[in-house]
Length: 88
Image (cartoon, rainbow, N blue to C red; front, side):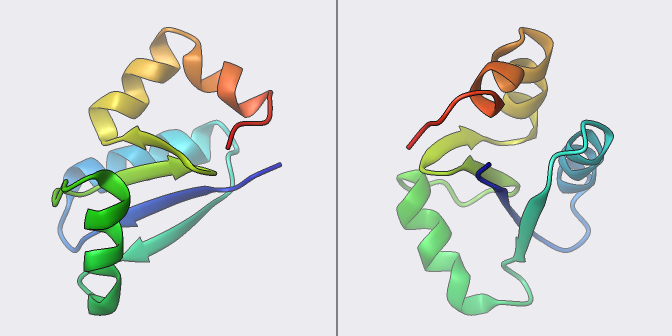
């Protein structure tokens, strides 16, 4: 199974909430803190098509979006659907 990748920042409540949901669903993820790994900021912006806010969440090559997007996908069942099939 692919792993989630979540770009985060310091003192980010939305990042905490997104990681909380991933942990509650037992979804493994790699965290990249752009405030600690400055060289990853441009990578995140390029992958998101210009978004600079955190969190930014990916599953394989699929850009899920931010915290609200993650919670929305979880609420409507889309998150479970993408986790149960190969994407990207």
